[in-house]
Image 1 (spheres, rainbow, N blue to C red):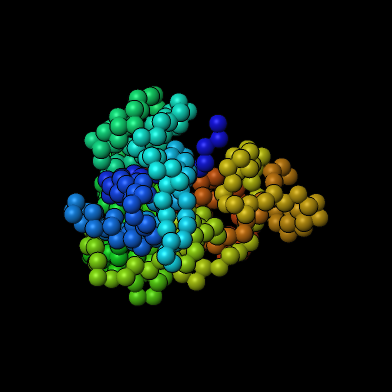
Image 2 (tube, helix red, strand yellow):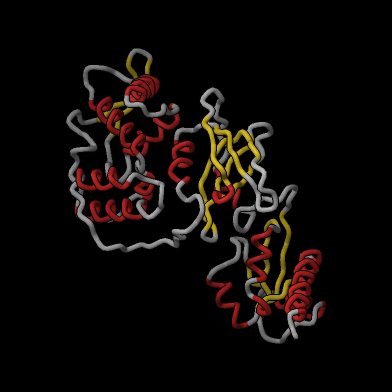
Length: 354
């Protein structure tokens, strides 16, 4: 059975479940005609009464869209009444809390909830268990396991940061760097939590110039919500920001460059099956390969590989991780930088000799 991928974006915190409950009741109502503005207003009123933060109209629109996907498959109709574009369930008796799930849907939903539970601080586990019981979901053996560092500093911030992103809150972020322990502050519009190399990072925009910035969670000292400030929505898909880089670091004034490197026969299979970047291509053109081999002194075996991306710390680290199995040819400035790093390493190791 084919399940749409939006199953992965279903509610994962108390505020979201409360919204779904209120939206479900309003969409079932046949005595009133509600448009998106009415539903947002009534949901926020109920959230305030429960002591929970309010949400934007865009958030409610997304919630309603999610109901139309697995596992709910709600049949929602949109129609005009007295100049308003109203929304309701096509079938008055329908409710997402009474819909019978198929065996496949239950297993998939249970696995999704178990997967969410692997992220410390992201969900309330008591609520998670109650939600699974309410849907008649039984515990099952773990099928998917993500890389997780239980000793990572500040992993407990995941849940709180998840909330402010979901609720589109502007925050006063407090942070420090490894080179300077003095705590700094910045007004910040948070967009995305991203994991890379077993660390969590918060991506967002600075309030003053809307520059995209990334902060590692282990260097965040806390934050305050600033409800009086308007949230700046990023104009495009945030994930697109990562298309031109490896990892999470955006160098200032960084530009896309062509990186060419030689890979040994041994490392080639690893690099081919797990590309360093999405732009990765093997140089198969014989004339082009001959030109590079005439220009540089290279081992006879191995392959030439080309990337087109922005050079950053993570790219350098990834290339260096293959030791002498990878040799960077171009750009020259990158080759010289890595060569200087290797020279310094060599000097440090040799200085330890007695």
